[in-house]
Image (cartoon, rainbow, N blue to C red; front, side, top):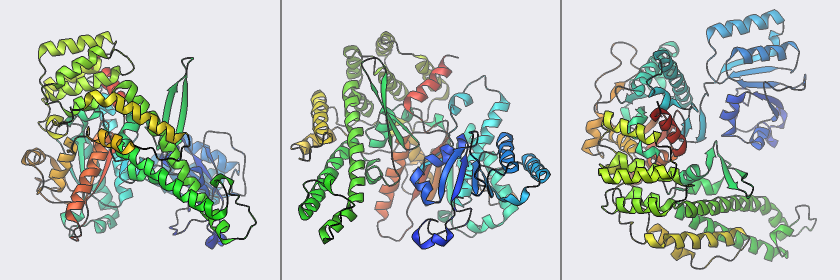
Length: 634
């Protein structure tokens, strides 16, 4: 789109393509800004020849010699604004792109207005881009549609509203499938929003296959099932506990403790006057540390940031020793001394500086993370959730509620109690004591009320977190030492972030102490479902029994019955989509399963497993608590 919808190997401003250089204006609206901002920064736009960008509803200066690219939602309001720009000769040439499909009536209205204005020659292109979804990582996306869970589960929601929501979700999924250029087989659990959305999506895809025909060649009838993509649509209710769980994966913790939205980390620090200082840190797509460590346990990230600092310090020292400078900061890019070492230093400077900025940013994040962990006792909640089957867990949780009276972590206490409620049959006296303690902390127990109703009414699947993830591990030892452990680790990291190039001694043993608290990796319920559908040979019988009952649609079969009894097959490429909210914990767990499955394949020549994870919204435990509280107060 930024290349004016021409496939281009290189960007338009590279020195090799100067004769093709076209400087352009980019016009966005609120929705398309969200789509673009998660994957491109201002510098990236500049590389594609975008010198200016603006919102469509802002006042803009006329640039009559400059071509313009519009990337906006297909609404009557946006079309009116484009017509005004066209009639006033605001720009030279108009390249118009819509985030999703422009419906027939709007298209006709648009054409009529353009024709009556006599400026149709200025419109060079009109494209439906089918990009109405947010991508933050290559295998992670969301439709950015909020509060779907509470709307679908609210008894007051009308049938018309449910149909509208299902259509919106089906349209978003249709866009992602067209982008991936593969017509998938669809599997979904029965009797909920996933079934409704699957039926609507199946119809849209079959219409698309009939109308275009070329789609069949992408994934036609002659291909084996392993070459077809499988789309697994699931309702959030199949596993609620994962939405409340605490995690020790770096990315999950950043999302849970701070705010991680469209690849921007937002850290709020309370000030003395009751206000907050807000730090916004952008995660660049080229952030090497995030790309390698986001899916690793937090202690590994701490260990690796120290290694990266040591590596940087050593390289900077070698560079300055050769050039005679006392510090890398003193190297002047405009230095006229034509010595080989100085020229090498000047060439290496941008890469080294960028690396140091990334390391410093993650030092900041990890340091603030440790402060939060320490002040809110998050390690204790994590440990309790990992040991729900341990007879001492209930006793430890009650002690934590009664002895730790701070209210700053009251939501964390409520989340852990909800997980205990979902995964265990708790004694009545224990429930009474816990709920009394939570009430004294002024916790809103509406969410708990709703969760109890769900447990009673639906009898959650046996594939819950008790069996799948929150299994008993021997991590209860050393729990008394954790406070000191976090405090020590925090001071070590603080020393590093304050510019110390000396590698802290003893950090290795400190990290290994924390690593003892980590549980062994286990599959979450959603990962078990994916395994039983994509790799039934390796799945457990309980999972297979559950997924054998899932509905099966094949949109490529345009005649006769397109829905048939499911058959067990293996698939290499899959997309999992959760209706009602997803989180980084499930995404990380799925990617771990893929890595493990691919490692076991080794160099066998068999295609690697790839799983893309998406949801109506990538949300946090606290936001999901609010949705459940809303349902519990009805």
